[in-house]
Image (cartoon, rainbow, N blue to C red):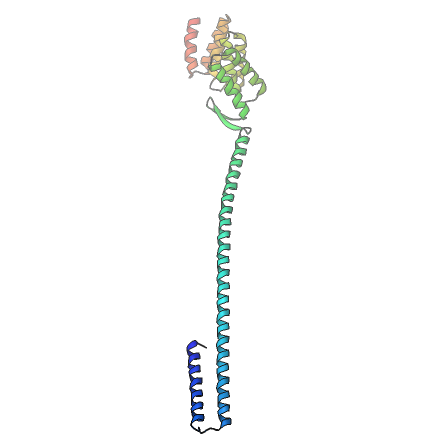
Length: 255
Protein backbone atom coordinates (compact mmCIF):
# COMPACT_ATOMS: atom_id res chain seq x y z
CA UNK A 1 0.00 0.00 0.00
CA UNK A 2 1.33 3.44 -0.88
CA UNK A 3 1.66 6.36 1.51
CA UNK A 4 -1.09 8.24 -0.37
CA UNK A 5 -3.50 5.33 0.03
CA UNK A 6 -2.55 5.05 3.66
CA UNK A 7 -3.33 8.73 4.24
CA UNK A 8 -6.63 8.35 2.44
CA UNK A 9 -7.55 5.40 4.69
CA UNK A 10 -6.61 7.35 7.83
CA UNK A 11 -8.79 10.23 6.64
CA UNK A 12 -11.70 7.91 6.15
CA UNK A 13 -11.25 6.44 9.63
CA UNK A 14 -11.05 9.91 11.22
CA UNK A 15 -14.12 11.04 9.39
CA UNK A 16 -16.01 8.00 10.54
CA UNK A 17 -14.95 8.62 14.18
CA UNK A 18 -16.03 12.22 13.95
CA UNK A 19 -19.42 11.19 12.67
CA UNK A 20 -19.80 8.67 15.48
CA UNK A 21 -18.99 11.29 18.09
CA UNK A 22 -21.43 13.68 16.49
CA UNK A 23 -24.11 11.07 16.62
CA UNK A 24 -23.47 10.48 20.38
CA UNK A 25 -23.37 14.19 21.16
CA UNK A 26 -26.61 14.94 19.43
CA UNK A 27 -28.57 11.84 20.35
CA UNK A 28 -27.58 9.96 17.23
CA UNK A 29 -29.87 7.53 15.55
CA UNK A 30 -27.69 4.53 16.45
CA UNK A 31 -27.77 2.93 19.83
CA UNK A 32 -24.70 2.40 21.98
CA UNK A 33 -24.12 -1.21 20.79
CA UNK A 34 -24.26 -0.23 17.17
CA UNK A 35 -21.89 2.67 17.80
CA UNK A 36 -19.42 0.41 19.56
CA UNK A 37 -19.65 -2.06 16.71
CA UNK A 38 -18.92 0.64 14.15
CA UNK A 39 -15.97 1.89 16.18
CA UNK A 40 -14.52 -1.65 16.43
CA UNK A 41 -14.88 -2.14 12.73
CA UNK A 42 -13.10 1.15 12.12
CA UNK A 43 -10.31 0.16 14.51
CA UNK A 44 -9.93 -3.20 12.79
CA UNK A 45 -9.70 -1.48 9.43
CA UNK A 46 -7.09 0.89 10.87
CA UNK A 47 -5.08 -2.02 12.32
CA UNK A 48 -5.29 -3.91 9.01
CA UNK A 49 -4.18 -0.86 7.10
CA UNK A 50 -1.26 -0.29 9.48
CA UNK A 51 -0.24 -3.96 9.27
CA UNK A 52 -0.38 -3.91 5.45
CA UNK A 53 1.69 -0.77 5.37
CA UNK A 54 4.28 -2.28 7.68
CA UNK A 55 4.32 -5.41 5.56
CA UNK A 56 4.80 -3.30 2.45
CA UNK A 57 7.66 -1.46 4.19
CA UNK A 58 9.30 -4.77 5.11
CA UNK A 59 9.01 -5.99 1.54
CA UNK A 60 10.52 -2.73 0.30
CA UNK A 61 13.43 -3.06 2.75
CA UNK A 62 13.94 -6.67 1.68
CA UNK A 63 13.91 -5.60 -1.96
CA UNK A 64 16.50 -2.95 -1.21
CA UNK A 65 18.69 -5.50 0.55
CA UNK A 66 18.33 -7.85 -2.41
CA UNK A 67 19.26 -5.07 -4.80
CA UNK A 68 22.33 -4.22 -2.71
CA UNK A 69 23.37 -7.88 -2.62
CA UNK A 70 22.88 -8.16 -6.37
CA UNK A 71 24.93 -5.02 -6.92
CA UNK A 72 27.68 -6.47 -4.75
CA UNK A 73 27.62 -9.71 -6.73
CA UNK A 74 27.82 -7.78 -9.99
CA UNK A 75 30.83 -5.83 -8.70
CA UNK A 76 32.43 -9.09 -7.59
CA UNK A 77 31.84 -10.64 -11.02
CA UNK A 78 33.32 -7.59 -12.71
CA UNK A 79 36.40 -7.86 -10.52
CA UNK A 80 36.69 -11.57 -11.28
CA UNK A 81 36.30 -10.89 -15.01
CA UNK A 82 39.02 -8.23 -14.88
CA UNK A 83 41.29 -10.62 -13.00
CA UNK A 84 40.64 -13.37 -15.54
CA UNK A 85 41.36 -10.97 -18.39
CA UNK A 86 44.60 -10.02 -16.71
CA UNK A 87 45.47 -13.69 -16.35
CA UNK A 88 44.63 -14.26 -20.03
CA UNK A 89 46.90 -11.40 -21.05
CA UNK A 90 49.69 -12.74 -18.85
CA UNK A 91 49.17 -16.23 -20.24
CA UNK A 92 49.29 -14.82 -23.78
CA UNK A 93 52.59 -13.09 -23.05
CA UNK A 94 54.03 -16.21 -21.47
CA UNK A 95 52.86 -18.34 -24.39
CA UNK A 96 54.45 -15.94 -26.88
CA UNK A 97 57.70 -16.07 -24.92
CA UNK A 98 57.65 -19.87 -24.84
CA UNK A 99 56.99 -19.98 -28.58
CA UNK A 100 59.88 -17.59 -29.20
CA UNK A 101 62.20 -19.66 -27.04
CA UNK A 102 61.08 -22.83 -28.82
CA UNK A 103 61.76 -21.21 -32.20
CA UNK A 104 65.20 -20.05 -31.08
CA UNK A 105 65.98 -23.48 -29.68
CA UNK A 106 64.83 -25.18 -32.87
CA UNK A 107 66.92 -22.81 -34.97
CA UNK A 108 69.91 -23.42 -32.72
CA UNK A 109 69.52 -27.19 -33.06
CA UNK A 110 69.21 -26.88 -36.84
CA UNK A 111 72.32 -24.71 -36.97
CA UNK A 112 74.26 -27.23 -34.92
CA UNK A 113 73.06 -30.11 -37.06
CA UNK A 114 73.96 -28.25 -40.24
CA UNK A 115 77.55 -28.20 -39.03
CA UNK A 116 77.62 -31.97 -39.23
CA UNK A 117 75.25 -32.74 -42.08
CA UNK A 118 76.66 -33.12 -45.60
CA UNK A 119 75.84 -30.30 -47.97
CA UNK A 120 76.15 -29.64 -51.68
CA UNK A 121 79.26 -27.72 -52.75
CA UNK A 122 80.62 -26.57 -56.09
CA UNK A 123 84.32 -26.60 -57.00
CA UNK A 124 85.83 -26.15 -60.46
CA UNK A 125 82.34 -26.18 -62.01
CA UNK A 126 81.34 -29.48 -60.39
CA UNK A 127 78.76 -30.07 -57.70
CA UNK A 128 79.04 -32.81 -55.11
CA UNK A 129 78.13 -33.52 -51.52
CA UNK A 130 80.71 -32.99 -48.80
CA UNK A 131 80.80 -33.06 -45.03
CA UNK A 132 81.24 -29.68 -43.34
CA UNK A 133 84.54 -30.78 -41.82
CA UNK A 134 85.72 -31.99 -45.22
CA UNK A 135 84.93 -28.67 -46.86
CA UNK A 136 86.49 -26.72 -44.03
CA UNK A 137 89.74 -28.69 -44.23
CA UNK A 138 90.03 -28.29 -48.00
CA UNK A 139 89.35 -24.55 -47.82
CA UNK A 140 91.92 -24.19 -45.05
CA UNK A 141 94.61 -26.00 -47.08
CA UNK A 142 93.85 -23.87 -50.15
CA UNK A 143 94.05 -20.69 -48.06
CA UNK A 144 97.52 -21.69 -46.85
CA UNK A 145 98.66 -22.29 -50.44
CA UNK A 146 97.34 -18.91 -51.60
CA UNK A 147 99.38 -17.22 -48.89
CA UNK A 148 102.50 -18.73 -50.51
CA UNK A 149 103.16 -21.09 -47.60
CA UNK A 150 103.97 -24.06 -49.84
CA UNK A 151 105.47 -26.45 -47.28
CA UNK A 152 102.46 -26.23 -44.89
CA UNK A 153 100.14 -26.43 -47.90
CA UNK A 154 101.86 -29.64 -49.06
CA UNK A 155 101.31 -31.18 -45.64
CA UNK A 156 97.72 -29.98 -45.48
CA UNK A 157 96.72 -31.40 -48.89
CA UNK A 158 98.57 -34.66 -48.25
CA UNK A 159 96.71 -35.14 -44.97
CA UNK A 160 93.43 -34.21 -46.64
CA UNK A 161 93.82 -36.88 -49.35
CA UNK A 162 94.67 -39.49 -46.73
CA UNK A 163 91.61 -38.58 -44.67
CA UNK A 164 89.21 -38.28 -47.63
CA UNK A 165 90.49 -40.58 -50.41
CA UNK A 166 87.08 -40.70 -52.18
CA UNK A 167 86.24 -37.03 -51.73
CA UNK A 168 84.75 -34.90 -54.47
CA UNK A 169 87.68 -32.62 -53.69
CA UNK A 170 90.18 -35.28 -54.76
CA UNK A 171 91.02 -33.87 -58.21
CA UNK A 172 91.48 -30.24 -57.10
CA UNK A 173 93.37 -31.44 -54.00
CA UNK A 174 95.81 -33.39 -56.21
CA UNK A 175 96.19 -30.40 -58.51
CA UNK A 176 97.01 -27.95 -55.72
CA UNK A 177 99.23 -30.45 -53.96
CA UNK A 178 101.22 -30.82 -57.18
CA UNK A 179 101.50 -27.04 -57.47
CA UNK A 180 102.78 -26.74 -53.88
CA UNK A 181 105.37 -29.46 -54.54
CA UNK A 182 106.39 -27.86 -57.82
CA UNK A 183 106.94 -24.55 -56.00
CA UNK A 184 109.11 -26.45 -53.50
CA UNK A 185 111.02 -27.97 -56.46
CA UNK A 186 109.81 -31.39 -55.44
CA UNK A 187 109.28 -32.22 -59.12
CA UNK A 188 109.09 -36.00 -58.86
CA UNK A 189 106.29 -35.99 -56.29
CA UNK A 190 104.53 -33.19 -58.15
CA UNK A 191 104.67 -35.21 -61.39
CA UNK A 192 103.15 -38.21 -59.60
CA UNK A 193 100.23 -36.20 -58.26
CA UNK A 194 99.52 -34.44 -61.56
CA UNK A 195 99.41 -37.79 -63.31
CA UNK A 196 97.18 -39.19 -60.56
CA UNK A 197 94.67 -36.41 -61.20
CA UNK A 198 94.52 -37.15 -64.95
CA UNK A 199 94.25 -40.89 -64.36
CA UNK A 200 91.48 -40.51 -61.78
CA UNK A 201 89.44 -37.87 -63.62
CA UNK A 202 90.54 -37.18 -67.23
CA UNK A 203 87.43 -35.07 -67.89
CA UNK A 204 88.08 -32.72 -65.02
CA UNK A 205 88.51 -29.06 -65.92
CA UNK A 206 91.97 -29.11 -64.33
CA UNK A 207 93.13 -32.15 -66.30
CA UNK A 208 94.69 -30.23 -69.29
CA UNK A 209 96.62 -28.00 -66.86
CA UNK A 210 97.76 -31.09 -64.96
CA UNK A 211 99.15 -32.64 -68.18
CA UNK A 212 100.97 -29.40 -68.96
CA UNK A 213 102.36 -29.40 -65.40
CA UNK A 214 103.64 -32.97 -65.96
CA UNK A 215 105.57 -31.74 -68.99
CA UNK A 216 107.00 -28.88 -66.92
CA UNK A 217 108.16 -31.34 -64.25
CA UNK A 218 109.79 -33.50 -66.93
CA UNK A 219 111.64 -30.48 -68.29
CA UNK A 220 112.90 -29.64 -64.79
CA UNK A 221 114.01 -33.28 -64.40
CA UNK A 222 115.89 -33.02 -67.75
CA UNK A 223 113.53 -35.50 -69.42
CA UNK A 224 113.08 -33.57 -72.65
CA UNK A 225 111.85 -36.50 -74.72
CA UNK A 226 109.29 -37.33 -72.08
CA UNK A 227 108.18 -33.70 -72.00
CA UNK A 228 107.82 -33.66 -75.79
CA UNK A 229 105.62 -36.75 -75.72
CA UNK A 230 103.49 -35.35 -72.89
CA UNK A 231 102.95 -32.08 -74.75
CA UNK A 232 101.99 -33.94 -77.93
CA UNK A 233 99.53 -36.08 -75.98
CA UNK A 234 98.07 -32.93 -74.42
CA UNK A 235 97.46 -31.32 -77.81
CA UNK A 236 95.81 -34.51 -79.06
CA UNK A 237 93.67 -35.17 -75.96
CA UNK A 238 92.56 -31.60 -75.28
CA UNK A 239 92.88 -29.72 -78.58
CA UNK A 240 90.46 -26.91 -77.65
CA UNK A 241 91.97 -26.16 -74.26
CA UNK A 242 94.11 -23.17 -73.38
CA UNK A 243 96.72 -25.59 -72.07
CA UNK A 244 96.95 -27.10 -75.61
CA UNK A 245 97.81 -23.68 -77.06
CA UNK A 246 100.62 -23.27 -74.52
CA UNK A 247 101.76 -26.84 -75.22
CA UNK A 248 102.17 -26.07 -78.92
CA UNK A 249 104.44 -23.14 -78.16
CA UNK A 250 106.59 -25.13 -75.70
CA UNK A 251 106.79 -28.12 -78.00
CA UNK A 252 108.09 -25.89 -80.77
CA UNK A 253 110.82 -24.58 -78.44
CA UNK A 254 111.85 -28.07 -77.36
CA UNK A 255 112.42 -29.32 -80.90
